[in-house]
Length: 167
Length: 167
Image 1: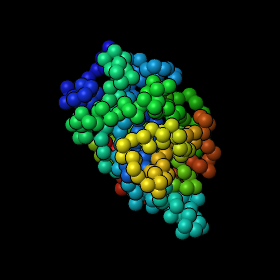
Image 2 (image 1 turned 90 degrees about the vertical axis):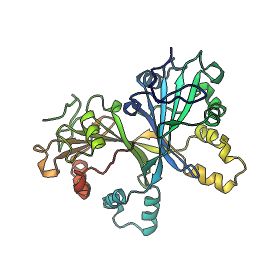
Image 3 (image 1 turned 120 degrees about the vertical axis):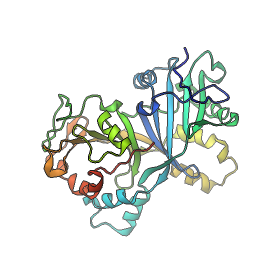
Image 4 (image 1 turned 90 degrees about the horizontal axis):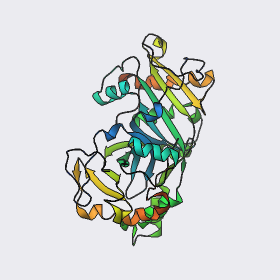
């Protein structure tokens, strides 16, 4: 069973398009990736995949879709002003304030959107998942799509999915 | 108009309960807060508030609810193994790898859930918003609820909301 697809442009390797409505899907987890990637990211999943995440269903059923959003790390002066206003930062040292601010990140400009689509038969040669990346709605070239599976194979025991559901 | 409320325990200041179904609401944005808070967090919003975020509607309409999830920052050995496997880290220095790993955070144990509910009349004395915090479903004491507005007043120009929608 193929997952519902949008009418937008498809990636050249797996034929995946940006799925309709994905931006309103359930949040699975969040993370950051350090320099030189330096992003802050969120994983969303469609209802089928969300249920599998929550129940620990392995393998994920056909039709599961996982989307990774990411943004440049930025510092929010407004956020920091508010946070420094909090009581716990009263009477603390400049070094402690610097450490606090250095660890405080807001989401800036979006980078790209990555998509995993489960179709055990169609994508049998890559663990049953197809992979695609979109920047401003445009799919990346074939070199990007083929670069995903060599890392995801490390997560074979969890059906090639690195993310865990964060309650 | 009061927002839909669950049957769980209400906070003692604003009478807010954990809203039903909030964990499936739309992701607004993500962030981290530095030491000593050291968390990674996500803001979700109900459909009414999500539309206001996306359209830049100020003030937010009555019934808007914003939820802040947060988790302890953790390092995922599995994530890191995969990330280090990526081509961009081939032939880089140990110092660069250390910087990369230090900036790479996964979501660990959940800390608490904070909720903002818009009701311009009921919560007129605190900018039209009520504030509550829940740990394992239990509301915090009055000291926590009353500590929210003194910071949120700094965001008066955006109806006391710090978050911006991250596309």
